[in-house]
Amino acid sequence: MRRTRLPAHVIIAVLVGIDGLLLLASVLLRVPGSLLIDLFVRGDMRALERIDAMHLPRFLFGLNAIERIDFSHLPRALVGFALLALACGLVIRARTAWAFTLVMLTLAAVINFHLDIRFDLTFVLSLVCLGLLLWYWREFDRASFAAATLYTLVAVFALVVYATFGTMYLGHEFKPNVVDLPTAFYFSIVTMTTVGYGDIVPVTTDARLFTASVIIFGISAFATSLTVVIGPLVGGNLKKILAGRFTHVIRKNHFIVAGASPLAINVHHELTRRGWPVTVIIASGADNPYPEGADVMHGDASDNAVLTQAGIGHAKAVLALRADDSENAFIVLAAKEIAPAVRTIASVNDSKHLSKLKRVQPDMIFAPPVVGGELLARTLSGETVDNETVMRLLFHGDT
Image 1 (tube, rainbow, N blue to C red):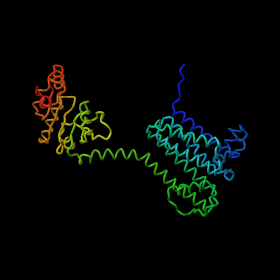
Image 2 (image 1 turned 60 degrees about the vertical axis):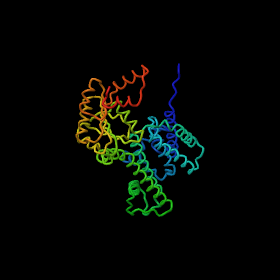
Image 3 (image 1 turned 180 degrees about the vertical axis):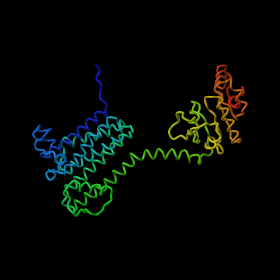
Image 4 (image 1 turned 120 degrees about the horizontal axis):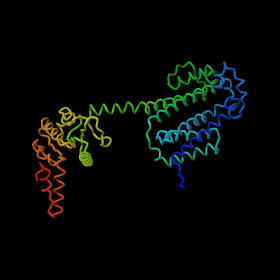
């Protein structure tokens, strides 16, 4: 049997998740007497008997053991929690998860150096994951709005936890002293939002540096939230408004292509490749097959208002390249009514409609069935195909 190899992004996600679990475990095992250690690590179910139900919230949040917790290892726990969440995003190859994971793994390595915890399993695994992420960066090419929102919320939550418990750890270095979690939480929110009422002031160098870090991280987190979550929503709507209201102001010396047929798409490609500006009009509600960034309008190309918005008064030519020959005829008539001096070009998809389309008198008729048949016959018979012959076939479809 043929063995199925796991994709690289899945392997990296698993390694990142393991690294996060190890970081979390290394911190939890440093908290003596916690509920998690008693119940799940030591299996001591009698720990529940020691809990007063009235004080359960205080016990769960560790208020009775705050002084015994080594807060210097709290950042490792936050990074481990973040890596677990990011591993889920790596599985779906989210680009945002890839970027956040790089930052978190780098932060984990820096924290290890700061705590003099070097060359342990988590440190080595972090470096390995960093290398794999950089080597396989092409694997993470999916933009996910949901993933970006999730990781932004995780970052804000981690910052709140860092600021709150960091304030508790340095509580005696503030004036007045911070001795309870509600006050620490209040100071964290006020500092993160840069409000700064001044009722609690850091008085030592460590406390001031910590407060400065909370301010910097807070500004960064909220700015990222606005950019990642709100930015695409506002930016997309603004782009549509600008495209609808202001793009037509700069339409000048351009070609107007009406239709989304293969011929229209190829003409648009060749004209833009040569540096000519092109405005495309496709039917309302129809799919847009043109490349992103193309100047595309939705509407009826035979409507005077639509042609005016497309800038027909300043256009070099109007190309009616719809799949329906009758619609092409109406487009030519509307164009001649609004801007008689503008050149009109129409395509004929059925040769039996050629004579009818001639009656609306476009400046040029392009009939692929007629032109293709004539050129193929001349080539097979050995006749000369010169520029004069091609132009005769194009202009008014004379045969």
